[in-house]
Length: 464
Image (cartoon, rainbow, N blue to C red; front, side, top):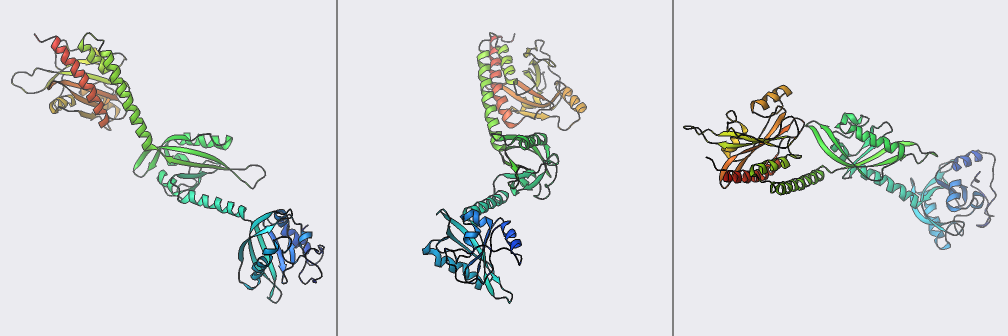
């Protein structure tokens, strides 16, 4: 039990002769017990500057026991350097005449001769008549206070000013705290996402994210960030995003045994960079395919067969079906473009493209057919079934003389030596993205090689 003494003691005790602790009446035992239970270091001085109270946390920080501290006149000669004693005492005792609390920082001496920088909060103790009767002082090591302030400042900065998303997820995998950046990324307000299941915020990717959070709760944080592809529900519709995510397990620092509080989830949106990497990788792959096709076509004795080789190499990762139509002679008295099918990928089964069109019969393309438009405009034409039902999309494809599962089309003109030779059509089935401008550029590269092979074939086998 820490010792204490009441004010009004005689001046017979010197600074090196502490008064023995008194226990007993007037609740001094209870007061000492309360002081010892405090987490802060506490001491008190009477009006003459004599130490009257000294709790256990003060003992821990400075090493002086209550029996050694209580009864000493100020800190001079034992808890502060002699050169600093007058200034320290003046600053502490000035709290008797000042309203509120006084905050100071100065160095105290430990029992083993070390120095500890402390921050004090001092306030006057009033007697029965309201007159100053002494000063109580609470103090703590400054580095501990600074560590706490830094932790608080870091938490506030992460939740307010961070340029990445910060979400504190509770043990039930529901957001408990969300910073402004994360709320914007989730397409909702900071308070509206709290307590909601992740599946309500994410149209896709919620299960993968919950699996990662569960793993962190059970086994701790993974050794490296994870990249998660999700679809976020927003008032404008779903947005596909890639979030580079890091996780930290949160546990209470106040419990003897770690008590899980949840998971800290930090993420950055890297969608644009990932799209850039994917596009660069796709361009490299397509360039390699063109190179491989050129080498394989060079081994073909028949130039027409070389055209189908280029077609087959172009299909890999690009389309599901492909057709080559050449321009036929127009009937006398008409300018309408007629096309003859000369090569096509097998429909419904894998395999290389087959040469066809020996009979020279035109394909029954209707007016405005994308392949016809492509030849007439001497450029690429894209077409699609749009939002038609599966049955209507099938009818749409069959009406255009395409495989029944085709829903996206890209027709590119075949030209060589200033002449239009025909068109090549690439088709994608349901479940794949529509053709884009970058796809049209690749199709044009393929068309140049196919047209060159077809032109060479025509030169080697002139019309009768």
